[in-house]
Image (cartoon, rainbow over the protein chains, first blue to last red):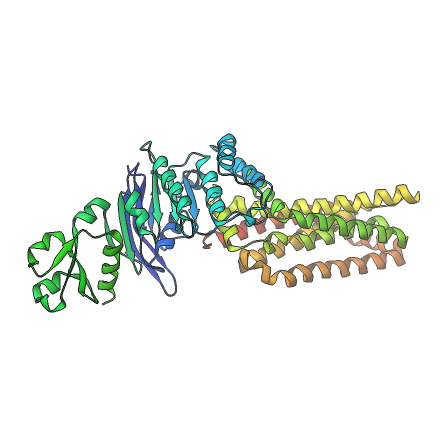
Length: 284
Length: 223
């Protein structure tokens, strides 16, 4: 049984449709969930955390749906978002008190240890914390209890490089026992290059790619050369051709590498480049 | 139990306004004492309920979309979340009543006068308070909890002002001719105590129905 199973998930808004998203995430892995602004990343994560209700489809976390056992479902998920979600006038002691009330597995001493380690001032109202302090407080609230799935929705946005490195390290420690997993949406694809095991790419509410990161990088080439050198068969195989000052750049599936002649230069792409070219391809 | 914890969250979010509520209550009670009108006990009780009705909508005013997301993440059902909000309103009402009664006690001690507080009148005032709070909460849940701040002024003031003016009118009429007023009530209702208790129980049933209704109204909503 996979830790996270999303089956035929759809959500309809007036001007947007999240269309039939399906994927699984095994225990002990990190999935990067990527796409442009408005692609449906936050919608998907909000559906997983039950902040939003789906139009159709099912989500299983550790074998149960939210409808089967709402409390157990939500106990097993830790969520950290781009927006700080604790009420503005709360202090750390209020957050500790509320989490202790609601979560059976919440450990006060672990929470206090983390807030002390990260120098989070108990006297300040949390609305006065910096962005980095707010993210650390959300992490402290999640890491101080037993969860199975960590859901991060652009949680590293706006963090300085030092804090971002700390967060990435926390995520790797989180999955180290092989029983827990992370789903992580971000625009900072270089973070995913470092820690993600799987990449799920969504565009305009639809799945574009879902594969192991290493497999994704191995199965694509970044091709550069002069525009006039592109012939029809190669044109059909290239993905997201973009012109630049030196000619063109595009992605090519590795298994079509035989189409390349000496006129072209190719190299291993980054996830950034794969995503950009696929978006370019879809937008024509 | 989780409903109590949600009521606790509402208390923490609005605790600054509790100090305001207490301050206003003290000022009102002092004014009453200086006024030295009759039925001080009844009027204090009514003021306590009035202030509680006004402040009971504070959790909606203090609610933002991200707060709702936070509460939605907590491992609890929608029913527990809604029941917690109603419990908060109930605690506020009981606090208002307590302040009113305490004010009357202080008045009696300081002035040496004995004040009569009619139990049926108190129960009926409590019942009206519960029903008004229930109606307000249903309105806010239907509109959308985090949109409460925009409508707060209107929904907060209208029912509570109506309650205030009607109560003052009723008390005024009773003050003019108390014997006739109580005789009329007994003639109409028979047993005043039964009317009072019946009213309070009916109000609590209305509140329970309100919780169920609001749960259904919000269960499918997104945050």
